[in-house]
Length: 499
Image (tube, rainbow, N blue to C red; front, side):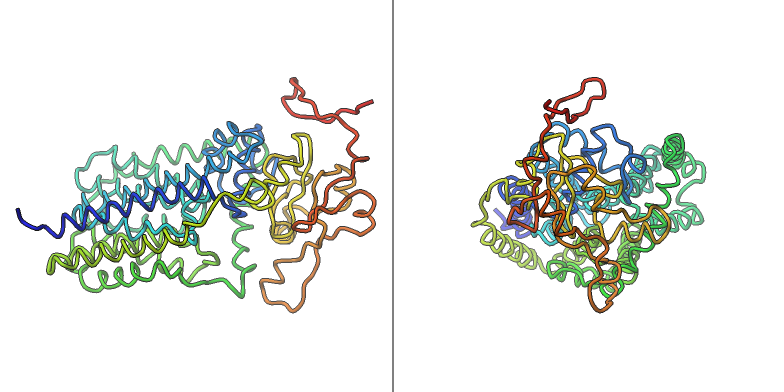
């Protein structure tokens, strides 16, 4: 029997892939995540589940598809931290599908099975720094983009229209998860124009495939217009977000995480060594990788999770380099297998002592707040700390006060609220008792801190008791003289006077 290094290496790397995905599921179940964006999108999904309309009944500055994906899961586990676990499990599943499409890109169009397994393994690092387990639109966007590229290649290979329809719908879904996908989709659009010019696509197929996402988006905009929220959607998702890079003026760009170092180096090696003589699919992959690299490194990337799709494409290109190197020297396959085994061992050691810390800490302050409140209570998120999952908000702009509301006021969406007046009016059960600073000025590097909201010591002494955690305060018992009851007519929880 012939000793096949490629087969053995492929099997070992496949086991590593199973380990990575399993570890992410394990972390979700036993360790949770206190990531603020996850909690923000869980709360937004809950508002959608409650029948609220984004941009009309509450403020958001993202496209809405993520919340409609999350709403059934959040609704099923309403008023429980299991809702956060559920949507994070969905995120890990979507990440596993992303790995599958990376593999299929190689298997069907680039280098073959082994190259696909290696490429997926480069993207499958079970680290937390890329937030592969967190309920963020970037993770879902990355899946939709790579799947969209796969079906575009499928159309180029067999000229079947339904492949192009699926591709365009997936690219549209990426945009509806987060509008930051628009720049990359624009680049793919330029690729499509070149393919049309080179007669590798037909205009009739291209226009037919584009019809459905265009009609869906028009219907979506028409719905918002009917609900008198179209203007808010446009201002919040495009005008406001165009100012976000200014907020991060002094930290507009960061470097990719160290986990991306090897795939990026291999990706550039493949770009220089193999693309020129490669297939059409490899050339297109290289262009998409280069476009995403330029966007991420020279436009705006303040957080590591912005690199989600760059990590995908660098891994795809790294798989090309690895496959070509293995063709010349089969023992290199064992080098890659050993690399992933060592990496898996490192992460296994990192996580082996991670245990459940209890709901009061598993998701930051969210568990504590959930335990102390009932469905009728209002809750106010703090400065740079979010914890409101299933409670009412006292203001239209309810999250990231000191940043989003400052920009919104600057561009005329809505003036900043008088937070203390709102607290006296709604008597929220949990509040943040310190100042909310103008993050816009702080991130730009202005010297000093500039309070934009503050809670007076008089109000705190009169109505609240400190919780001795995260500067949180709870409403005094004498201000909680109401019963919480469900109103079947309005289908909401409402306070009723005990007397």
